[in-house]
Length: 571
Image 1 (cartoon, rainbow, N blue to C red):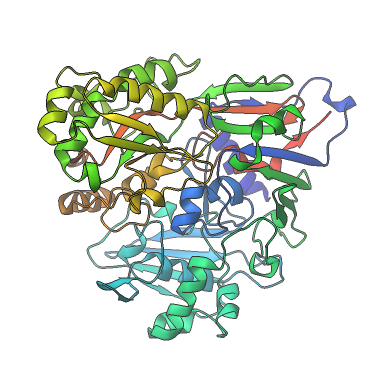
Image 2 (cartoon, helix red, strand yellow):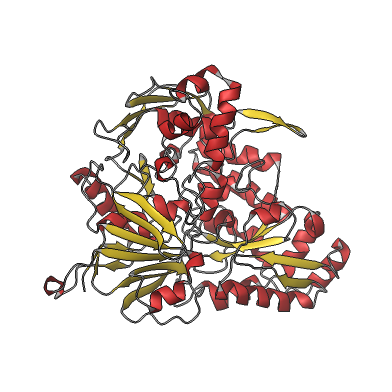
């Protein structure tokens, strides 16, 4: 990595104030290990972090140093420029315009140069502009996690193969969080998609609106980068970062190795093995296969972490119940009745701040917003709308009866194993029993948030945007998108036009008084509609093996692996 990027990462580290495993006294007499195991409770399912599957399963926590972008998520959840990948500059003018320039040295691990084609593909996939015929009418061609920001872009000026791209937004549109666009783990290799559908490049069909070709490109974008252990086509998985994928199997994990074509500073450890939630992380810690661990606090129970420096840190993700808008929760009154019986305060007290005694900011109490974090200057002024839903309310029985929820069964799904979430479901079941509501633990190892959309469960217990592992960022883009009508991350199919309009206005608004008014309206609307029940800021257990250098906790969707190319473990 070049010095400019290193400096940016240094600033991010200082801002984080997070757990750091620095150079330890006496390390000079120890030997550096050539491979580090990284245990994280993401679910490795897709290389494509911009797709619904990739974003929800945690691609950002695994591939941020494999697929680089113009920015990456830093340890405080903020976007940090990655000048190895290229530069991005906002151009003054009446219409928002961003000038992107990819590094002239940038090349994928397969030898193909990075180009503006990659930006065109990302925009096409996430703009929501391209649709195809469906059973009930037109449906989106691309299964994008979110269209936020991208749908406001009018065009991406790009000559195929060029290192330069000019992104021009629609007149009257402005996206303040533009630094969250074209980011790490989301900027996919367009040449792979072009090769798969047998066209010279993706730029021409996108610019010309070639419907048959675009449908083939979309099918590959949706499905061609899915990851199945033992069944990888490495030609479809070139890297633009310090590491590349070498192999993926249930027995040996996801093996990342040094990318010899990487043009920045070489990774300090040549091999990283990623063990995800399905890898029996307890055993991996016990047999010393893991040198870095990043999991939901309490999810592995009372796991001994001898030989590690460990800390529980407040997270940017929202631990929450995402409620169906169909079936037993088809009416907002039923969702509100359930919120009355969910013991939010008791859940926070027991599970929400293990070893964390924050007086203000993240994890300082029950979380009363789905999109505004507790360290926001706006939070104290907008948190009141949720105060009536602390849980265990005596009115829950009456509300359940009047809403039709009484004598009904609520199935709560989550990805197992997860000891904390299992205990939380049990606590919710006990609290709601008095209101005549039967809560069933529907957790399973193969659970996915799409089961909520399919009606197989009534609620999901997870982080931001129903993510089972690392989640959240300072800009809260995933949290906002998960409530937007038609968004890929909107697994409960919630829709409210006024919420959509408010989120659009907030994306461009810089007047603090207007922002506060909009946020108050939004909070009142969401607590009335109750598409989800926020519980607390999802705390993370982050542990670095003794002898680790440059391990920095990142309780965000990027996880501890945000700077894995800087890790050194000496033993």
